[in-house]
Length: 290
Image (cartoon, rainbow, N blue to C red):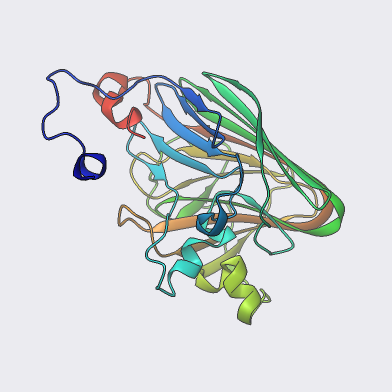
């Protein structure tokens, strides 16, 4: 038992963590690696009482030291666990401000550089395709619902999210709000049990962002090494930023949330990691850690 829990007392010299991408087909976990990023996606079967109902969620760490981590669980007797298990605490799409029901997702296609997965329940179908490359990754998520409902795309990371203009240089960790448009407080979210179930009750400093006319939102996070994000926002959807607790590495946790009511939606995100290729040799151990 001790060996299973703690591992061997001594490791052979020169032992290194695996450096390649892999697909763990049973639990539906795909892990992709490039010089810029290590990214894991979970689809797979329901895990019963332990499941976070987070099919198609992604967990990210870049070669520059920035991360977007799965928050895990703080302890089953803690009220804080309600936040850690909520949709807003994961990089997923939420339908109707409700957690996903128990269901089985599936990996549709995989290679060392990309993965496509599907999550479907009650006539709703979500597809997510992730592709990694030397300078970052792309993330395309499409939603097709059985009937119109509220759709919310969420992505979080180290630091607070700040908007940038399309002409600003790609530099992660800008350190403050950009001149791309003033943010204003937002009210009108669900309250009570609905807010707890969705995770919105744990959000603070919620602000709305002005969506550009071309629907392409540019921004980054304030932590060092953060990627530059370009996100295509569906017509009629709004964008907000927020902060939340529980980041495992102790850094501030900044969220970008895009919401609208529709039957179909497509979210196309491009993440560019500045300087990742130049730092490949010094960052190998970071990118290789699962």
